Image (tube, rainbow, N blue to C red):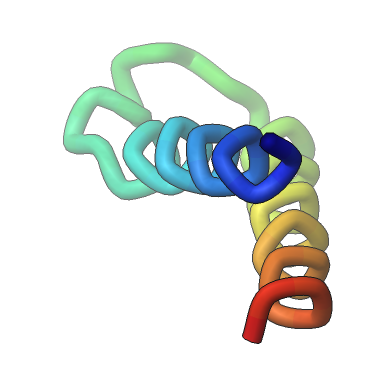
Length: 51
């Protein structure tokens, strides 16, 4: 179950960060940086557990 949750979180965050709408959402650069860090953490966790 955790595997699916990680994949869903990675997919949603990645989709948002790579979306053309990202600039229209008025996130600060700090918020975008935090989101990228979270994506990195989730990706590393997935790799460590399932690869």
